[in-house]
Amino acid sequence: MTDKERIKRLYNIIENTFWMSIRYAHGRHTYAPYIIRDALRELEEIFPDFKLKKDQTIEKPTKEELNQTGTSREDWLDDLFEDENSKRNKSFATGCTTFKAV
Picture 1 (tube, rainbow, N blue to C red):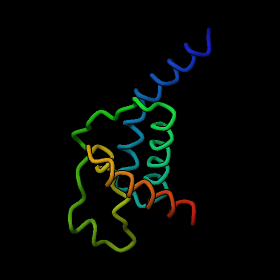
Picture 2: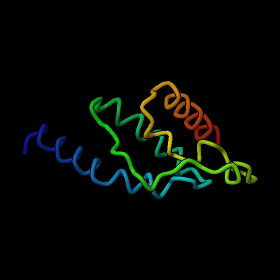
Picture 3: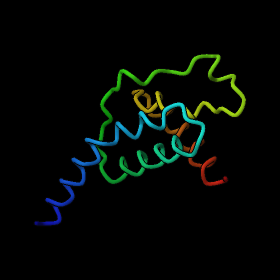
Picture 4: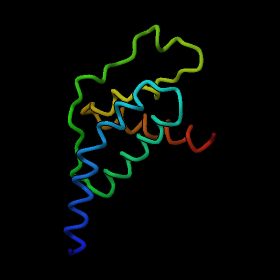
């Protein structure tokens, strides 16, 4: 197997499983959302053509959820599916800084 074939197979594995990681981490108040944000940023650096497929189960948090003690907006991953890179990159930067500082 060539390196190109290996990379293609790894890409397919990531593409077929990453959505489950997002579902798991979405809305959790742990390191999980930050790890996902960081992993996606790295995936997009390695594979610029990598695109997340919209997941209809991932919704924006409610005001009540956002007002809970110990929550952060970055705990929810709905913004990963937005088309605007500027807002998304801001979330990546915030999430990664918070994760690394802990």
